[in-house]
Length: 230
Ligand code: APR
Image (cartoon, rainbow, N blue to C red; front, side):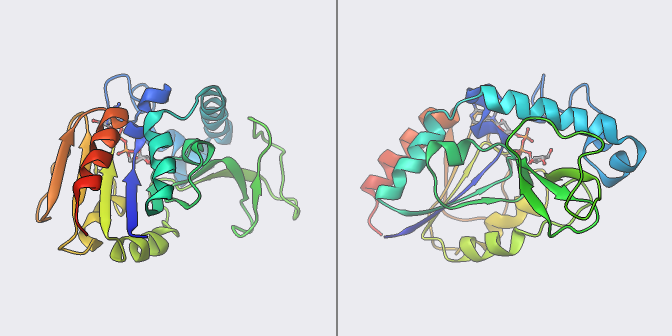
């Protein structure tokens, strides 16, 4: 099966009712980004950070995968699909996608502040002061904050370099290193970009632009894939 690699951002979950970051009414509007999503913010006020992600988990639990997530999961019948997502929600997994690389962490996991290798699946919405790892240290959200390393980037680059088709869905491509992934896709392969407001992309050839919502945009991409001769 041909390898389809898809980079997704907040726009793919918008139709599920999860706020994007930079659109009007986006998540960062009304939030000081550095207060809730940086190591400095965590040092200054852990409760504010924990509360922010507790609310994100609650919103995520209420949301359902939409047609875009579901169609990408169904594409596994025809393609070897790897999803690289910047999203911390679990909607790709709940839609049935089996290979999901989370570049920016996962909402429903917590991590030890003493030993980063200690990561725990959460079965509830709340992480609070006093919740500790097995070594007795405070747990933090398993989220890659601004200024932190992106450990899954290596796996994402390897997948991208081996793609036969690449797609970018619902991301403003403003945050690096994720935004740089497109440049690792082989020059000759088709690269779809699906967004209601297409991001600027320079120096990338074989771009197929679909200006549309993620759900209908993915349907159009699938139609187009079926006409392609690989
Ligand atoms: N369908 C498709 N695209 C959409 C839709 C939709 N229904 N709604 C919004 N979009 C598009 C917007 O036009 C925009 O290009 O989704 C994109 C969302 O961009 P951002 O809010 O910047 O989100 P994202 O690119 O995922 O942000 C990257 O930045 O804040 C950090 O760590 C956070 O992972 C996040 C990263």
